[in-house]
Length: 186
Image (cartoon, rainbow, N blue to C red; front, side, top):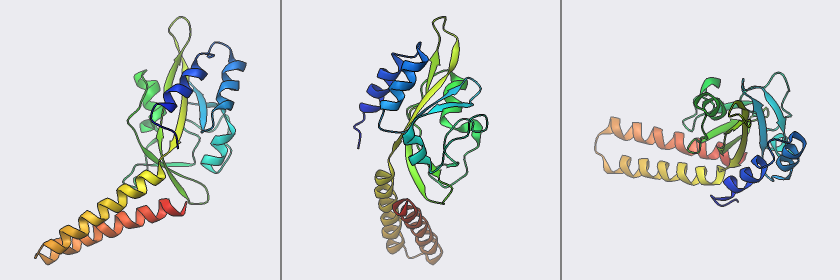
């Protein structure tokens, strides 16, 4: 697993070659994690091999927009609208996004939690060209967090005398455990 400074270092190396398209793509191909580019409208323009393994599919040029994954969800399991995808926000706001976490669903139904690193790319004149994004798998970290949430809800359920609250808390615990199982099986 990459340490927290590694994504920035990997992106830095690739961005150093941004003015030379062939060199830029060669740098992205060296990155051992999923990395891809999009134009300023969000159309995917390039991806490295790790994207195919990560997403469980080959992105479609001219069709895929904002992300190389098949479907994208929040940590709460809600389908994420494309205009809220991390890369869309980075391009719209013209800034790097470093705090988002999402869950990608592959065409086979398996899921992977990840932290994206969308970074806008500007030309020499400061005009937005598009963006580069890197996806870091954090599924193990999320499974642990979900299991902790389930355990907390179960402790609360056992500590209350209110039957209705106890059932709600147990139901929440089951939901956290189901989410953890879905990530663990992927």
